[in-house]
Length: 70
Image 1 (cartoon, helix red, strand yellow):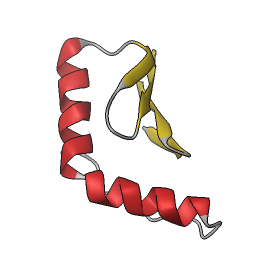
Image 2: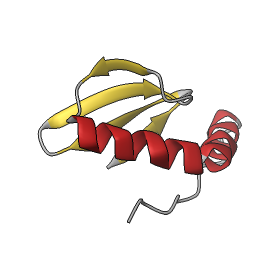
Image 3: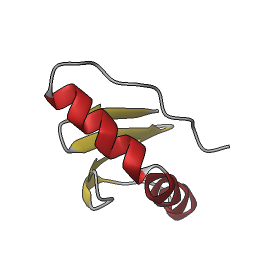
Image 4: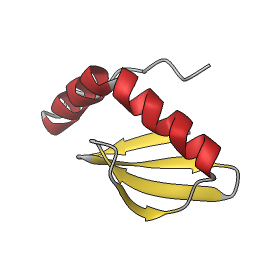
């Protein structure tokens, strides 16, 4: 599960949680290596959508759902 806040987000995997910048820099927390690689790939694929959601949220306009990694 992923929650976007300002220019960072929280990602959850089981009991693990990380806080990362929108550019993929891990600010705190831990993910197993395999899941971290998948998350970073998802961020790279959806970079434009994440940026668009950030702009919408910043302007108080809500956000749109981004397709999960399958």
